[in-house]
Image (cartoon, rainbow, N blue to C red; front, side, top):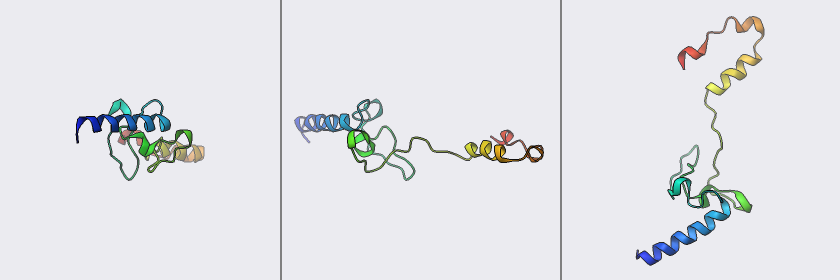
Length: 95
């Protein structure tokens, strides 16, 4: 692809990228990657893929936070009765 065409495509990506993500028009640190995982889309990917500002409908919506099992330990211990908490093994040892 000639340099003139690449420059035009980059400008078009920046234009549409700024519509759906003003802070990162071509992805985090200007990466402009095309990488998508089944569980999330990285910020380095072009925001025209994952952005959702200004009415833009993303092809692959980004998940803002993915909870691991550690986040549920606190929820479980908060639900336990005080006498049951004494019997629970300290799981922080394994983390």
